[in-house]
Image 1 (cartoon, rainbow, N blue to C red):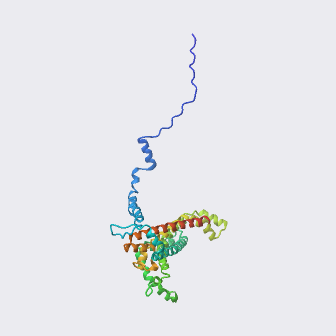
Image 2: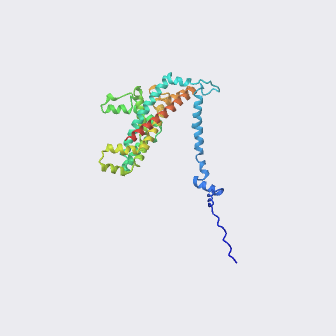
Image 3: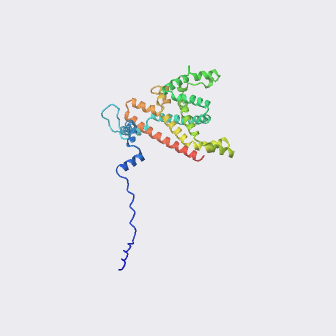
Length: 324
């Protein structure tokens, strides 16, 4: 009896491995929850988003709508005037041109000196000692005051007859330096800037202290070993390392200076005199005069100016710190 012949072995390519099947159903839902969190978490920003849309997005869109009309703010009907409001702003409104000039002067002085003073104070008070903590609180104190309170305090200081500034100068024999301050049309905007700087320097100092305390000490130790001077250490170590803090301070100071509405009205009255009139008070005056369409056009120019100045400042700071 012969043995059975072996069955032939099948040859050929091995079957491809099946790709791992994706989780479906409850498994997939659990995976998404682990990755993105509970879906209810997305409801938390909803109140802030609703407020942002109602109080910022919708009014901004309406500003573009009313900027090309002559709406007085009360009438049910209004006419379209095209770009006439913008043409008048570009060449025929001396009050708006004066307010824009004052705003740029005010912003430039505040940004330069407030940033400089806050950086100097922060450099002196970086260490967490008791005296530094006490001095930080003293310099930060004006920030917690209301703008109206600050305006009344400095209105008393600037009073040309009974004010503290002139009396202090006279008491030390510097009568030649006494001034009418806010009554001097050529210098009033700079005295307003001085008040703003005193008001917010402590606030910006805190931001710089946070930035300075994040710089690794090893960088300063390496600089000391290399024998660099204090100026070189600041230029090549400190200044580039506080770039984020500097950007925040300059951007925030710029926006603050353009929004100094209540401080101007507190010092200069309503409406303020021409030498203290800035863009925010000029726009408010147009609204108060029932020129809503024209005020909307002024607001759009104001927003464009803030965006332009902020972009220029950020690029300038980035260039100076990259070349340090």
